[in-house]
Image 1 (cartoon, one colour):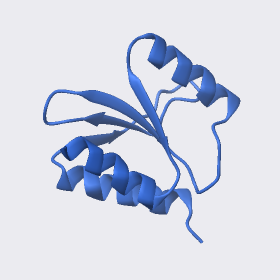
Image 2 (image 1 turned 90 degrees about the vertical axis):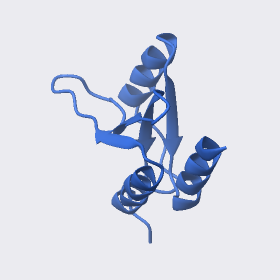
Image 3 (image 1 turned 90 degrees about the horizontal axis):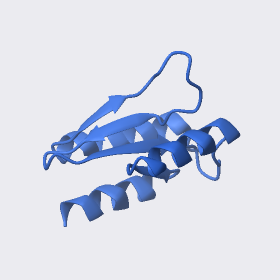
Image 4 (image 1 turned 180 degrees about the vertical axis):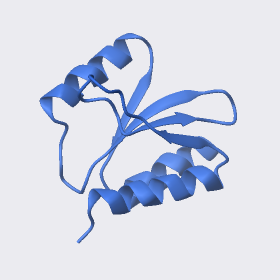
Length: 93
C-alpha cells in the first residue's frame, strides 16, 4: 500500500533528476499550504500538494490553492507515483 511519504519521496527524487529544487513548504500559522515549492531550472515556480492515492484536499488546502491560483501560481495535486512521473515528464518537454 502506497502512503503519502512514498509519493513525496518519489517526487523529490525526480525533482533532483530534473534539476529542480523541491523545497518543503511550511508556513507557521497558515494551514493548508502545499507540501512543496518547486523552483525549476528555467525560472518557473510551482506549488505541489502530494497525497496518498485517492485522498482529496482538505478544506483549508482548497482555500489556499484558490488563493495561490488567484495570484497566478500553478498548484498541482498529485496522489500516485505514476502522476508524479507524468508531472516531471511533461516538464521535460
